[in-house]
Every structure is written in C-alpha cells, then in structure tokens.
Length: 488
Ligand SMILES: [Zn+2]
Image 1 (tube, rainbow, N blue to C red):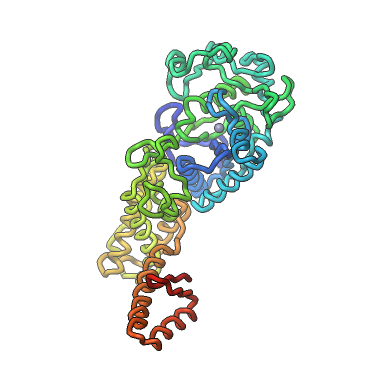
Image 2 (spheres, rainbow, N blue to C red):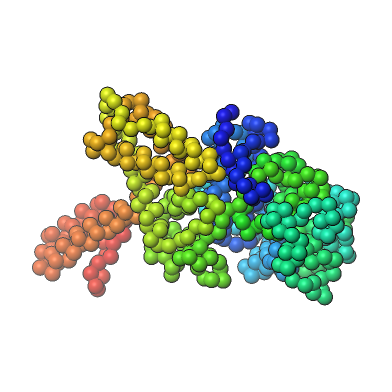
C-alpha cells in the first residue's frame, strides 16, 4: 500500500510517517464520553475529528478497528480521585438509578453523533462491562510493584514508576513541574505521593455502583478502564490513541504509566489530540456560560446565537479548522460556513449536468493529487477544503462556458468530489428546510395579507377562496384579533 500519510505525534512532538504495526490493519482507540450529562460540543468536535481520521484511513484501504469507550462508572468530579461520583450525583439530582442516567445520556450521545453523520466505532466497550479486566490489570500492576493498597483502595505509585520510566513523557514535563500543578495532600487523603492516582477506590456505605474485588467492595479509578479495554481489543501496543487535549496531562499520562507497569510496553505508537473550542475568542465552558449544546446550536435557542445552524453546516464548520487548532464559534463564522457548505453541495449537483468538451482547460489530476496531499499532511481538512473550492470554481466556470472539461475529466472530478466531500469529510446533502420555510413563510404572509385586505373590503368570495384553497393544500389558517396565524 503506497502510503504518504504523516501524523503529528503528541508523544514525540513531531510529524511522523504513519507506518501501521500490522499493515493493513490499524488499531485506533479514542477516549469516549462520560455519559452523565448531555454531550457537549467540545466532545463532538473530538469525535468528528476522529471520524475524519477513521474515514480517511478506511478510504486509504486500511482495515481499521476503531474502539471508542463509554465511561459509565468510576469518574469522580475531580480528575485526581477527589469529589463525588459523577453518576451518583446526577442520579440523586434526577432521582434515577445510576444506570438510568447512563442509558439516557448514552442514547442522547448516539443520537447527536448520528445527526452529525459520524460512523459508529467498531467496538464501543463500557467501563462497567469490563470490571474483571480492570481488576486483572490492577493485580498485575500490584504484582510488578508499581501500586500499593491502603485500606481497600489501590494507588499507582508514581514515585516508584519514575525510578525507571519517564512519567511526564506525553506532555514533555519533568516530575517537578508536574508536582507544581497539583495540590498538597490534605489530611483526609493518605496516599503516599501527590501524583499517585487511584486504580481502585474503596466503596463507601452509600456508594451505589460498586463491585466485589480482591480488596473488598469498590469501583475502578477512571484511568484504568481505557488501559484495560484498549489492551483487550487492540493488544498491548496499537497504532493510534486519541482524545481531547485536556486528557493529555492526567488521563493519558496515567494510561501510559499503567500500560508500562502492567504490559511493560507503551500502549500506542501515535498519540493524537484535538484542540479546544472557543466562543468569540473565549474558551467554551459551562462556568463561562458560553457552552451551548448541539441541540441549542441547531435550534438557535441560546443567547449567544442569532439563529440555528443545520448539523451539516456545523460539521462543515468544524472541518474548516485543523483538529490541532482552536475552533472559534461565532455567528459570522457559522453563517460563512453555511454559505460555503451550500455552494459546495450545489456544485456537486451542477457537476452532474456539465456537458463534455473536446479538451480540458484545467488539470483535474493535479487537483486530485493536491487533495490527497492535504489529507496526508496530518489530516489537514482546511487545506483539503480550499482545494475542493478550486473544484467548485472549475464546475461553476464550466457551466458558465468558461473552463472546459473532457468526459474523462468530468468523471474524475465527480469521483474526486464524491470521495472527499461525502466519504472523507462525511458531509451529507441537506434538505434546505430553513430556507424553504423562510420562503414559504414570506409567501404565506403575502397571500394572507391579500386575504386580510379582501375581508376589510367585504370581498368574502376572494377571502373564502384563498382560505379554502390553502386548506386544500394542507395549511391550517386561523383568524385572530391581530390578523392571522397559520401552520402546515
Ligand atoms: Zn480514556
């Protein structure tokens, strides 16, 4: 397989040629959502970015096993083993069983990702479905001397680990720097080192989600699930591990340490991280009040949104930035994307109707090569899109009688546009419902105002005729004090 794909590897901080461990197979693990609340847009961006990676690898002909987990237990509010259990807290709040919370938000998560047209992963394992694997892994880490037990809780011994390993390898930070970023140990926490993290947490009497283990009743720490499930489905070392960049410093750093301590090997060859979202230049977060949900973005029901934007507009907007750049939401940017997306889709329709010429005035093969070059350069979707817009220019010019294309080139251009727009970028044609509704709305206002005038002039024949004919077309017309209301 000819391969020019280059991936930016967080682990080495440079772009590297992508050479799979077991070509043509590729193993890819992406940290999935913690399903205790509605999926937020930052997560959507991460999963849409890895959908692009998955789609492109499939397009290149790799047999990809894409594993994306569901965290449905063990995630405390603080990423370092402090605070309440996220599920138990939400369950109390919504007066539901923790597993009802899990079910509710897993379904919601799947629904949103399907609206965004992301392909489902090959395997979607859950933390609660892999308690035994996690316990086995913890036993092995204990046996190898990298963990210790304190009254039913098992901690990973970071100090011991650093004697023979580089704990801060992923973020390129020395131990002293990492220690600076953590708080002094309080009296209530008796773990030995500040960076030590829990592999297994002893259940309190009120803990709802707990399992029996060699160390008594408890539940797994958040980080161990990904190590256990990636090892189970992809082996001790696999090709790509991905996630949001907020996972680098703790979650992924700990995953590497766990795998090294258990399997004596680094889990993944290439580490990929997606950047964060901003809104009008400010980091998107719940506390800043600028964190809108996908549904709010579709409906426009949020103070920061002028109106709603369709799922494909949002998907197109997201692919217009490279996954390693920040992505800034603003109404202007979304409206520009909406125009761009429509232009792109319209060009594909136009392309089907182009008439062939004797000669071509453009080089379509070169355009195709440019598209591959962009994606081969660390999945550079914005550059890819700029090349696709050269395609749009050619199509529109050819229709207007400017550029010319032979039949062979028309077919090559069709293949190129279909491959990159539908298969790789994962865009779908969308019924232009909003625009239609807009036009229909204006038409209805016009017709019903004519009817209103007719009524004022006591021209009952015209007024009734309009009403009856609209009713026959499926419109429901209601006369009100101020004029009229209608619905389809
Ligand atoms: Zn993970």
